[in-house]
Image (tube, rainbow, N blue to C red):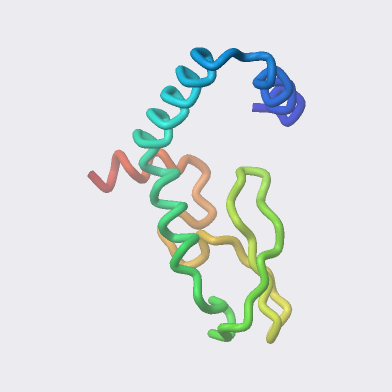
Length: 103
């Protein structure tokens, strides 16, 4: 989804009534629960503790990728990496195919 489309959705959320917000929340939570790739990414993001290049534990969060994946920068070697480094999903074009293959 394009950024402008997403910003438009966020702008219109303020116009929803309580019942519509509740239904929207249910739909979002349902989509999150069934998104296995997103869950695998989120789990891996939480386990990042060291740089894959130099093994330093001195890291900073360094923005997000276009796909919404957390990036990090190592304070020791100054290299950046995303949360999927050292995972089967790293640089994968169609991550949803990994779930199909892995199950």
